[in-house]
Image (cartoon, rainbow, N blue to C red; front, side):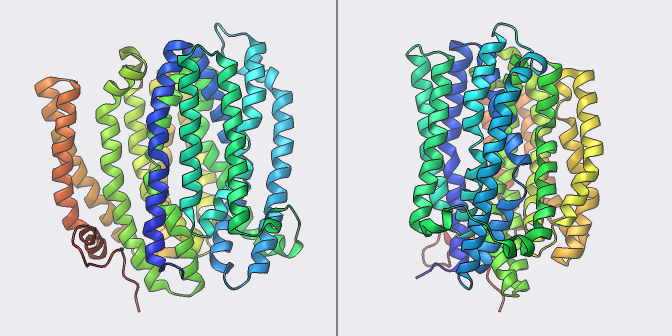
Length: 512
């Protein structure tokens, strides 16, 4: 028997969140050991290759993964033949793109090592070899994105998050052991490459048991291409532009500053980006549910689910990013040193604000995709490029690493001013003032409680870790008391249901 839709949403949110926590903790330990044992330039080159390939995978996604989530969620029950043809066609696109991109990377690696990044102790040949081996392995993110989208469309996200958690823990644990036992750079590179391959093979094996093996064999269907061409074109644009907005700061830092500086800046930003797993987990779980409800023409249930989940994103995301700001200096001092921690405090704080604002956009964006209006995001993302890129380049050139995150903040200020009215008018069918009020009151409560906590801790004990931690905990309790009174009633009911036995177990009640 299939689980009720609301139970699936809650289960998938929990799976998406739980799948990343162990990876984050071991990632901190691995970064510390590489930094202290092999040097900051080794850490920098490893992170450069991984970041470069993530950006490349985002650009080469072509929007197909979003199409597969939407179409699989909507049609897996009523048209399995169409879903099979869709998956086979997508497999052909992804694997062909992987092959072409891998070949191009192998050829381009010497030029990148010589003319783009700024090496100090590592030779260009060594950097080239790292990029070729680790780069090709990391590009398996392309077919992996397809397989993840299938789990999302089937609303079986426990599988892909379980695989991610297991391989992520294995990857980081192996890295820690290699460094502890005196292994060098290429031992780490080969180990990382092996775990990427293992992760992909495990995805394929599990999917072959959930779906038919034949559905995963590359093929081609003209009707599938024609049916999804318009939606895919907009999603391809969004994918490309999202890669620009997300990675332009790292690209500029890698060109204008040293690879060592790039390493610790990228690590700090990846720490902030991990916070996005909360709104993204909720959005990933909501998207197939929204798509299915839209296919069933159940708009009242979609909107009810949206309102409750939007409050859930705000309540869970705001304390997370504030906590990162509170603990950046002690945490990065432990991983690197005090000088590095102080250098990245300002860009981390700006990024936290930007990522929080981004989290508030996740559900409106997913809602717009479910109702078939990706053109809102694609057109405005293109316009935002002409703001983000100049601001980022000017910020790094003028202020160094401190100015790297200014473009990302400007991107979200632009979207709040221009995109939100469009989402509300054309998709959510609600006044924009209602959206600003829903998000604004939570943000105001957070600013008041955490702002006061920061000021009290700073004036009484400076940047002492214990004082900041106590202030954060007290402020979080105060914020929680206020937030529980502000959230959507159905979300409050669901929250109490986890405490009170016998209550209904999930959030928004579906409208009749």
